[in-house]
Length: 424
Image (cartoon, helix red, strand yellow):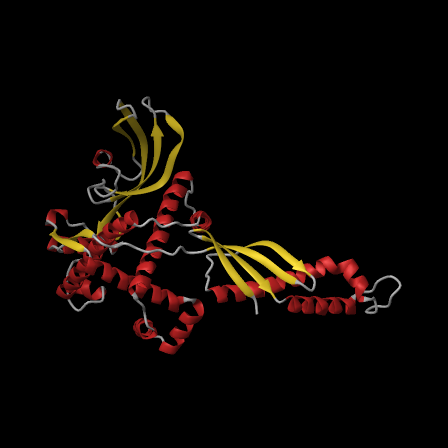
């Protein structure tokens, strides 16, 4: 059995000193020498017959290195369990002190989650209450109709609401093309393109095959007026037809009637708005918690998360520059601080999650997914999902606790300031 002690370097770093039974080390060394002896042939000796003294002389350092590496992992694991330390990532091995017949000792430096004593007194926040209006429901239904729109080519001029497919070439004030500023097969909807009313108005009346020059009045960075020009060649004009908003449309969406669909949309939007209100409230409370309670975070941990995130962004074809890294780093740092702060509050208040509570969530998921409960439970336990569910439940419990302790002002938001939600 190892003897272990720990020294605090700073809030997030610990040095573990481990002393292991030297007899066990030398027993493993001797076993390794004898295993090598069986397969090694030295000059003047038959295979497997070279004296151990020569094996040690020729290969001792390499054999010792392999044995030490294997034993240190074992001893380090025992020391961690003995001390109750949970490193954030792999330890940095220090100097090994080995004296035959006397001792085997080494040190390991680890990064750990800091011990926090969180002050959550005096929290104040505002809970904004949103109310879904019929206009919000109408907007959602209209956007749903838009997703089911059918388009057909029309041999006429373009009107508001039509789609125009075109090639666009930037031109200078004299009408000459600007090299490198050409876009082909651009599809825009007149009235909803996002290119601006001024641009769309100059496409009204255009027909297939027609070429037009479009000029827009803009300002340069200094505020001086400039004229931007484009040569547009219309490839096609499409007319868009929306389905009727009636019971048949609702049935196609999985409801029995339009009224049932409106009711479901209203309930869903209210849930979304309530969730938005909850997120705002928690962000306000979290800001106060982090202001009152500094949380030291190892730089290595932040960089590790940041490297993983930016690598994923690159795989998805997203641009990663210094500004993106800086913004991502700040977000990652805040998320780590928030997670550790909430966990510390749970420990202070004895807030915990039972296996039965986790099991209930898994049962609900199994039911909704049509899967056998035991099968899903086994998958979660083997893949780490079981503990992630526990963490999620614990976090919700801590937030409920904080909200019960905070002084919260209820604010009914005017309908004019209710966020507009549309289908993604």
